[in-house]
Amino acid sequence: PSHFSLHLLPGANQETVIRWVSKREVLILDRTRSGRVDFNSRFSRVSEAPLKARDGKIRLHLFIDTSSLEIFANDGRSVISTLLLPGESTDPIQFQSSGASTRIRRLTAWKLKSAVPISTVEDR
Image (cartoon, rainbow, N blue to C red; front, side, top):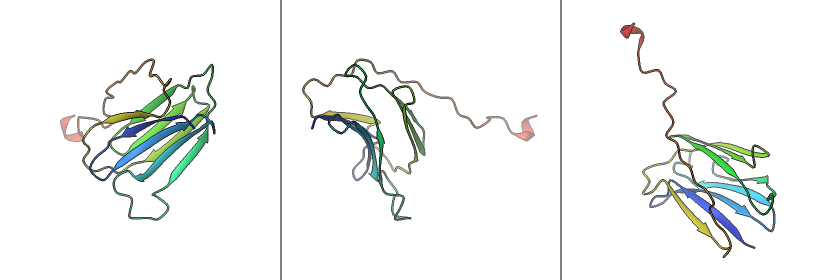
């Protein structure tokens, strides 16, 4: 079956993989190699969510920070939320596809501001 995948924070021995398999109409999150995974046997796993293409397309919104990943697919029809504990990475993201007709129509990235206040009580 054709599929495409996003490899997040890949490094020498790590990556978190988001994959969509068209034949099964499923979105897969594989964090079995997403950095530190050895502290609990249930942490290192593969999660799935149903995801049907609309007009032959899927839409993903990813929110990634230093320790979490939120995936909203097709405007929230499928959602996956998870914790990540990556080590050093070589690239922020890599794309792969097995289908000759797979295209990325638009890719937009925003740098989010910190949710932690910069000032402290002493600064007031």
